[in-house]
Amino acid sequence: TKSTFENIKKTDAKIEAFLTLNEQAALKQAQAIDDRGVDANNLLDGLAIGIKDNIVTKDLKTTAASKMLENFMPIYNATVMDKLNEAGMINVGKLNMDEFAMGGSTEHSAFKKTKNAWDQTKVPGGSSGGSAAAVASGQVIASLGSDTGGSIRQPAAFNGIVGVKPTYGRVSRYGLIAFASSLDQIGPLTRTVKDNALVLNAIAGQDSHDFTSSAQAVPDFTEGIADGVKGMKIAVPKEFMGEGVQPEVREAVKNAIATFEKLGATVDEVSLPHSKYGVPVYYIMASSEASSNLQRFDGIRYGFRAKDVKNLEDVYVRTRSEGFGDEVKRRIMLGTFSLSAGSYDAFFKKAAQVRTLICQDFANVFADYDLILGPTAPTVAFGIGEELNDPLTMYLNDILTIPVNLAGLPGMSLPAGFANGLPIGLQLIANAYDEKTMYKAGYAFE
Ligand code: GLN
Image 1 (spheres, rainbow, N blue to C red):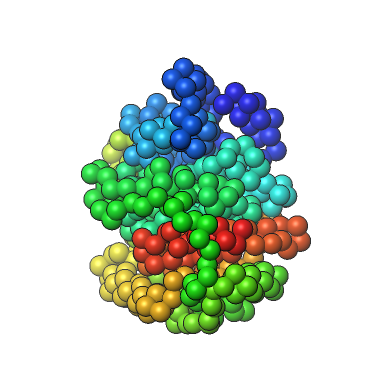
Image 2 (cartoon, rainbow, N blue to C red):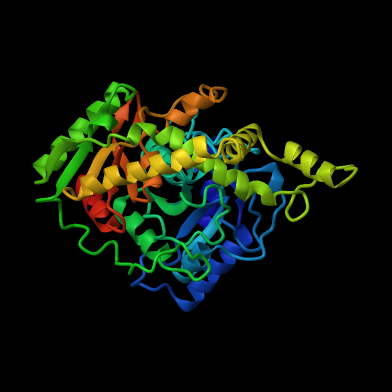
């Protein structure tokens, strides 16, 4: 733990992944583990982990990278934090992100711009950019992120590491600062597939504090991980290999297909005809949920309040005007509009209907296949500042990850080569609660 902090202090001037270090408490926890003796049967015991700053940590500042929560000190732990603690993992600090997890480059943080671990002129992806860069640069062996439309998988892809969004309901969201509650899911980012399965083992399971967490039994995700993919049926949606995908990325996915075939899997082309509507459906639904979830930041209950306010309305208006960044305001406006009486049927309701069609597309494929394969993101990491003022281009980054959240399925990104010195991410998608198949295939491939 000591050397972890030494290394973070040395490298973070360059990477800028951390918002808050948890040094005192972490060293104390490490000492306690030393005193009781490391459990040789628990591979996670005493290892350092970094935590995305939208996961609440008792007595440790949790900001969601927003000025709104700049000095917010939670009085309780997210369920995943209690679980990591039980597993002996040591939280060394909180990681940078896009404000309230809205974004795909970590440039929307109110505090700093995290750099890509491979090239510091490039973005680390987002919104879990700090979580990905910290692992890829060797600061921690694992981190937690959250994924609403791609926020674990896309930064994992951009940094050449393994990132998993578990099935919706697999991991408790209690203590995850809500963005879009029907889509949000916490998951691990690691350097290897097996590490990832180990961390998911630690954090998964039903939780009485989150009624959307599932009663499904939690298997040991490492069990059978080395069994290989012989006989596995893999589907590649043709919509995932189309125009907007950078040629080098498409090439890397084709190579991955050849590898899986060589390992004994069969690979066929399929269609997810409604996936092309994923981005508009997501931006209506996620923004609607966000506009509702973010009502609680009213200048009274949490954190920031504007100065010299005159009356109650002034408290609300000025606190929210000054406390939220541009991207968050954009989502609140879009969401409030979509939910308003005059637009609900045309926007929110329509989006909910198309979401059902997207779910059915996946169900049709999983009736015949074990796994879906494609790129994680259409391109490799882009330059810092390049897409910041172009929200629509930024939104299209998640075109290949968003359908997975809309259907509640588990998805993994893992490294599959390089283009111009930057990592390419391969995405594996499994049926609900079938993370094991995804881990097995990822392990065979890496
Ligand atoms: N980039 C997407 C967005 O901006 C996804 C974010 C996420 O998964 N939290 O909403």
